Image 1 (cartoon, each protein chain N blue to C red):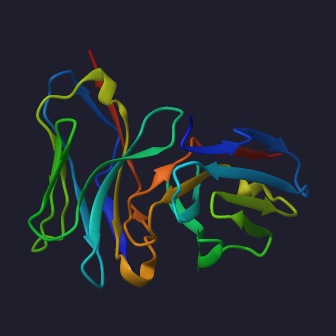
Image 2: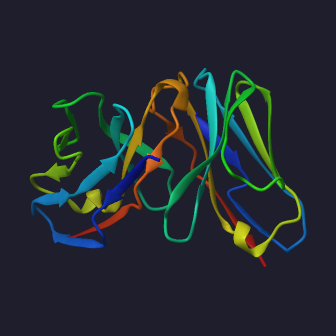
Length: 113
Length: 114
């Protein structure tokens, strides 16, 4: 059983489209995150939810909207996709919000044409 | 704000060579420090961590010591294997009100040849 699973793994789409990436964790963790990894491998946090409550919201365009229907799921919806959104998006979870010990999914590679 | 700086890569070594990847940090408080590893095509995995000054984290033959005086957390391994080829990320977390937010270094690509 995969601990943190993301779908889809690959996403190729046109500029201006809207797309979603789903994430589920079966570890019973309270906290989930979205990180963006750019083409130079640099990782930056986007959002974090703790028990369905948004606790971290970095400087991210409004076109990005996370949704956490329950503490095992954290989805990422992106409106009006732009070329600069092309990246690998990683979902992660941790047992508690302050440990820094994260379990990452395998990533979703988004390519915007 | 917090920041992490790693040595520039890529690093290429022969099997059984000694590995050092340098990492220094800037933080306002007393962060926890981490090394994460990303194997090709996979997500990141926690390799080791240290939560206070002079702590040594170790795992799978890798070690790193939290040096507050030099604000460093260098990763070392005495004898690398081909299977260690991956991207290594140094990271810090302030804990508390940072809610576990990790600030990552830029990553160092390690390639080990037989």
